[in-house]
Image 1 (spheres, helix red, strand yellow):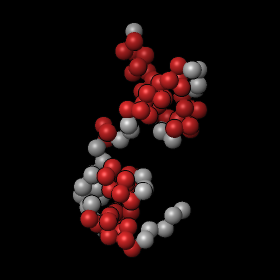
Image 2 (cartoon, rainbow, N blue to C red):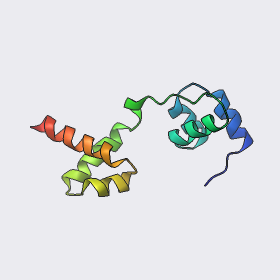
Image 3 (cartoon, rainbow, N blue to C red):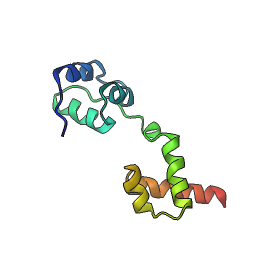
Length: 98
């Protein structure tokens, strides 16, 4: 576990209520970690635009791995994406192809 520095907390407060993706990129942390820390220190948590959470490249890679015969569980572990999210991406792409 990486401890939060005072300078990081200052940056976090500057992003209060803003974009969690930008705050995470500035801090070198995950969007979830940024939101959780903001809540724990009493600052307004940056908003996570759900539709933009996973880049298109990650979705494409998940679909390519599935096409290569990997299981949804192994893709989830490889990419660090929740199982249900990978399953949705895979089956959405199969429905679009049909």
